[in-house]
Image 1 (cartoon, helix red, strand yellow):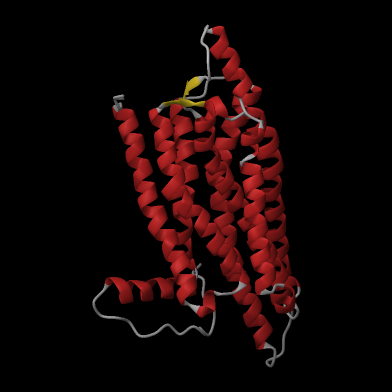
Image 2 (image 1 turned 90 degrees about the horizontal axis):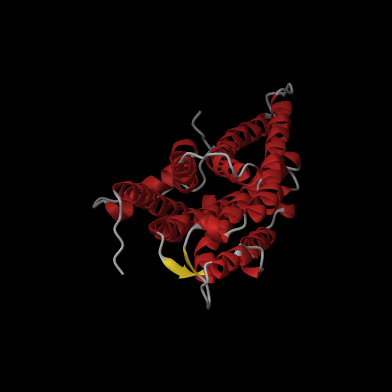
Length: 326
């Protein structure tokens, strides 16, 4: 069946493809960097890899599905629901990865001497697996019944149609706004974001407290340690800020849809909110490259070794200090 695409849809598809072309290679590069550089193997960077995997999936899976939904094919209800659920899973995975990163940075400054015995590679792996399992449960909840099937069936029957309903596949047609607002946003998005803000405020407080102490000439290492932690915490807090900035507008629009059904939402605002959510998956590698030296050096090493004729010298995996550009 032919389906003509309007100029507006063509522009939308073009922007989405551009986001995907930045997001997928950028986040693959993040995963690659952690693989090749032993200095990027601690718990924080493992959680960053989990976040990068979710962002790769956004570019490789969610964006193509979003383009499909925008075209609006006629499908069965559960087919459309399966197309809509991956973005819920990956969003939740990103939020939980950011929360794990925040807790990890808190433990680094709260119990620096016991950190390595508390945060072991095994525990980090269990935490990552737990984040993904919980994300699957939250994101697939609509498949278990919290959806708009009853409304669709009533509308289908009211039109005198028989058999399994066929619908134009749209996110709001299959996903319940009660689920999106009361369960997804009020339980699994907003509280974790607020908790992360409190954690980072406590991290900055603890670091500033340590840095403000008068130290002797022989106690430079603690100062150096907390100075490094402050710089890394600033970069990771920036990642959190960008995530909140990208996702809150769409959730606010969902709240307006639920609480004020008669309110007019300009279509352009909805598209901007969608672009922000998808574009967030492309932002993190850029932040890592500009603000975290170990990532920047490793990115350049990968580029030199695999995309240039003349290889660079080996990475010094034991960099004297983690530099994060202000």
